[in-house]
Image (cartoon, rainbow, N blue to C red; front, side):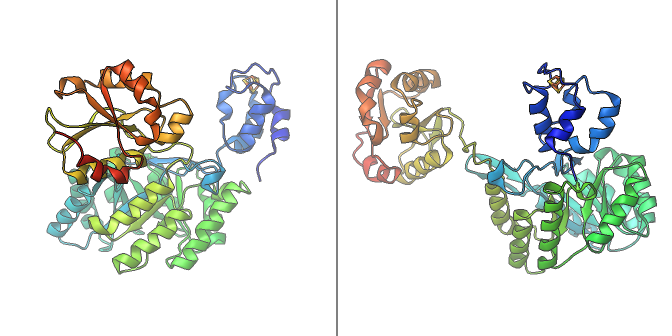
Length: 442
Ligand code: SF4
């Protein structure tokens, strides 16, 4: 179990110099105790204190990096409302090395093309898990090499055959793949291979007691780049294991389980599989390996994932720059709204439905809606006038009419004065844009 803030405080230099970024040593100790800081931030810690505090100051779940920017773990809370979640679950699509080369290439192409734009954000799947179902070292090596040439996504290499891992991993070590599996039989060789190639490794055991035993033995080999697989392959048992592992690492600071967790789906039907994967996204997989690979199948999972990992304290925002909807021309209306994503996309959807190519200028209101922004002084006539001038829309249209939301009709006079544009008061709600647009003289 981790140390309390006061126990950590006793070991600190008590200079209260603030160089660690917190005003006092006590505040720094409290931050360390809750896993929100690094002991390295204090330059005055003695070696003895460092040794004593090392485990207490480490984050409750170690960050493991692999592949093309994939980061697993490094979470500090059980529930998003406690603070936030930092690293979205890494989604990996599996490819078996028993498929033909043509089938493999087609699947890699399909995975490369899994790209989505939603509420102003771009997202895609993170990587490919290559599974050594052939159990043949040469086949795994060929497939690993050819897949790595056809994608820049993160790569996971999965085999329990040490010869297959030894043959394939060095071929792509510069891509820093995540490799597995190290189990109770082979862990010394697999962890040594991971250490030599500087790649993280999955420790797999059957159940939490065996996993604890395996982690402790593996740690003694002087390597700690681990991802944990509790071995379960049914939804209920996997959910139970994921929840226990997360609770033990966060609440009890139980160090052997302070690593990211990887989950594997068991369902064959794609809809069932996506539902299963959604459970693991919610609680608490750092990475998921699944079989579904079509755009329509992945969309609901990635949408849920995006929603869960959005920081509730930071509203999703769109770029506060001029947006064109449709084939705009010099007669196109100019709408003003805020840069809160939901507000902007509600307006954009209705403008699109009006079939009148238009400009929309979202004002930077820190992602707040129209009334909230106005009440907070973030949707003021001066600010809107400045944005109108800066966005260059005056060079794109021949008129000088700007439409503002009906809820802020009160600013129309002052905005007209500041901007020298004629201000037209639009509907209060975006749902009124369709009928409002029919009144526009174009
Ligand atoms: S840098 Fe070290 S000595 Fe200074 S306030 Fe922080 S913990 Fe205390």
